[in-house]
Image 1 (tube, helix red, strand yellow):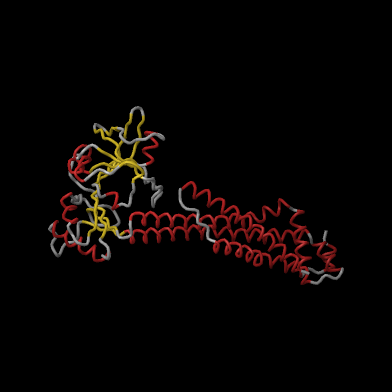
Image 2: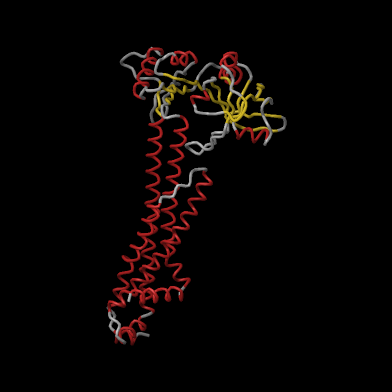
Length: 401
């Protein structure tokens, strides 16, 4: 009996192709939207985790000013300095550190130019920030202290200025500063927020301070903790030293902040999960709308096929068989919509992942749940029209015009 009901449902769907497609369109959109949102959200979470992992889970970032939300206070926070970095480097809990200064500038080579991020740091920056060289060498501590005109290039800047050519030994210009390229950084790709991590030029921090920034301020200090030192212990030691150096009394708050990469990863992951859940909930409303659409069309179908139903009942079909026929037709429509939605959703997620340069991370459980939910929609919203068809009086149905 079930197979016969499926055969009749398939024949009815094929006979009314356009109406059937429009009926399941809400299901298709709902399932596709849920799968696409969740897949892109999970890919984004993986990208955030990979970006934080590439920096090192035991790395701390020291910045001037208090950490918090809302508008900034009227006073500018006292900047960090290279002397602070030297004092921190002497702590037993610190393995390596790298003071940072950044500025956006235009880099020129011949007739080519590119707007990029110029980062000034010390020779330890490669190890602290977990970067490697594709070719060439790093600048030495002596070259950094002397502020020599040397730089390292990211792959994006290399592509913009030199194409596929070898940049090593070449000279580029930033404002009035010329520097020689001594190293090429290995590619890293997109960062936590989709930014291009390879779009940068790195030079000795003293060169950037003297020739580009015009001051001795340090915007942040990246700190890699020694092996076996917990984040809590490292943070406590660094806080104590900085409060002493900045002469902060006991009853006053810190005028600096220390960020833990694990804490940052957890915060970004939580935000991403909330946003993905919210968008998925909105997308799930389409499934409800699609179910209502199926119920409406099935009610119309019952009205159009009243005479057919009367003939079936008159020749011996039971009310249960009629109920099964229309219920199966509703479920088949929903399942077709679910299958089409899965294909469309995965295609949308793949395209979105490629566009945003994040991993394509489909979740089989979400796909299965979306498909099962589409079947449930078919049963729930198809039951009322099916029951109405099964309760038709055969004599009244045969008289229907």
